[in-house]
Image (cartoon, rainbow, N blue to C red; front, side, top):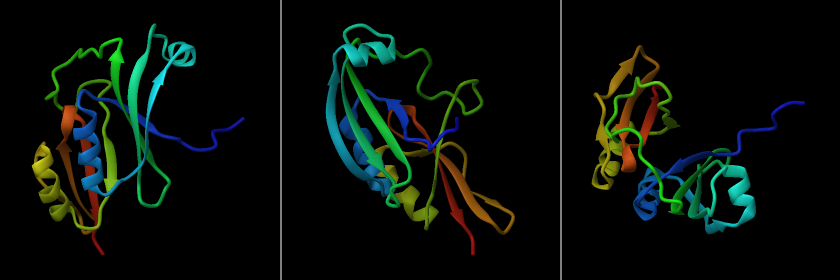
Length: 146
């Protein structure tokens, strides 16, 4: 038995519209939106009375997707501050390859993106940075230098 593919990464958010707008500005495409509730949702999440709104966004090549979810019930919980540093155990980030890193950061700033550090050059290979987006989501950006 083997994994066929990674289907998506799920991220729980408070403001679904803001999160969707951020990832659409990044260049992702909206695949669809839906409401999820009922016994199947309860069983697979281990929660009771699940009712949430989801939006699925995908990369332009169609190979990677994010599922953004806003819980109506039960209410989402926040165990840590949203401005936590990147090195906390269990912290995740999503990394995207972009064609113009500086332009991408400039376009994301009006959507709340803040650089965690600065744009860094890795040898003659990449420009790299991490930005904090809506809900404290850490997004890595990489531009391959040619």
